[in-house]
Image 1 (cartoon, one colour):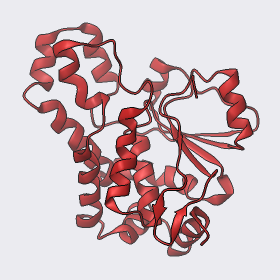
Image 2 (image 1 turned 180 degrees about the vertical axis):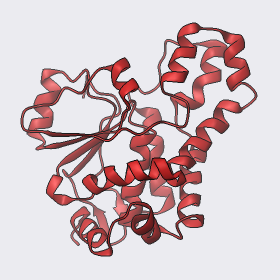
Image 3 (image 1 turned 90 degrees about the vertical axis):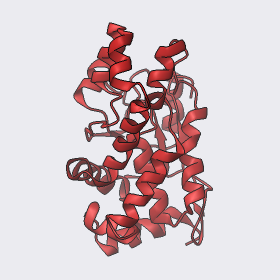
Image 4 (image 1 turned 90 degrees about the horizontal axis):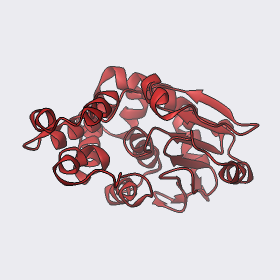
Length: 251
C-alpha cells in the first residue's frame, strides 16, 4: 500500500493448533488518503468490512476514510489515552518546547504511553468501546475485514493483540507482531528532529513495555484470555470458539 501506512495482514503467524488463516483479517493506519490503486487492491483482496477506531477529532484532522464500493464501514470511536490525539497535536503545533518539557520530559511521555496502552485493556470506558469493535472483528460473517486507527499501532495494536491471544499465540509472537509497527512506512514522522522528537517519540513508536503491560492486565485483571473475552468483550464461549475455528488455518 503506497497511500496507507502500516497496512498488513494477520496471516501465517504461528498460533495454537496451526497458523492464522490468510486473507481474512487486516490492519492499517487511517484510510483518508486511500488512492485509487490501493482501493483496487482492497477490492481484489475481497475486503468488505472496515472498522474505524478513530475519534471525531482524529477524523477532523486526518479526514474521513475513503470507502470502496461494496465495503461496509463501521465507526467505533476510541479515545487514545496515550496522549497522541488532539491534545498532543495542539501542543506540537504550538511548538513550545518549555510546555512539552513540562508535560513529557523526564520519562513522562513513556509513562503516559505505557499507562495508555494498559488502559486499553482495563479502563471500563475503553473496554466497552473495544467490546463493540471486537463483536464486529470476531464475527466471520464480516470477513475479510480491516480495522484501523490513525497510525495503526496503538488502538489497532490492542485489537491485533486480542486476536492473537484468542488464537493462542505465544507472548513472543504477540510482541514481535506488535513491534512491526515501528518498521512500517509512515508510522514515525521524520519531520520532527532533536529534542522535540525525543520528547514525543514514545507516542510515535511502540515499545515492548506497552504490549507486555497489556498482557499483564489480561492475566491479572481478567484471569486470562477466556476471562478477557467473556467479561471484558462480552463474547459467549460459543462465539469465541466460532472465532477461533474460523481464524486458525486447518482447525
